[in-house]
Length: 161
Image: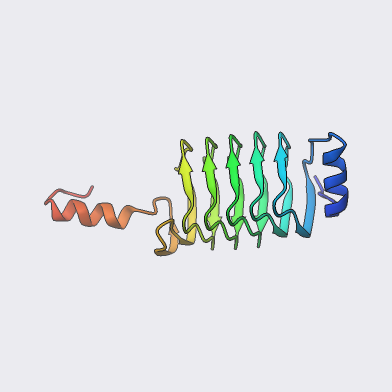
């Protein structure tokens, strides 16, 4: 299914008019910073170069693709992010609560300062990530903290596997 290109003005006008179904849209080079969006469906959508900083998203279907998007200081609550894709995004300081992040892919994403409370954390796919604590993890992994667990296990004299 082909995505339908929309402008930020059209997106906001349709949302203000009560529309919540934005599946399969393509939004590029837009500024939605500080917006409050509730109950929208972005399933299959693609956002490229969109400023989503300080946005508030609640009860949304965010199973979409986000490319070069700014999510700094964003609040995402009770949203479905299952199988969402984040490429080259900045999520510094984002607060993700009560969200399903199963099988979400993060590629070259900055997660520094992100808080994820009561949200499933794994299994996610990570590639070249800056972790919540600022540590860069090169390459691919399903577990951002495996190195620490291995070192801790060796320190205690336990077998790792």
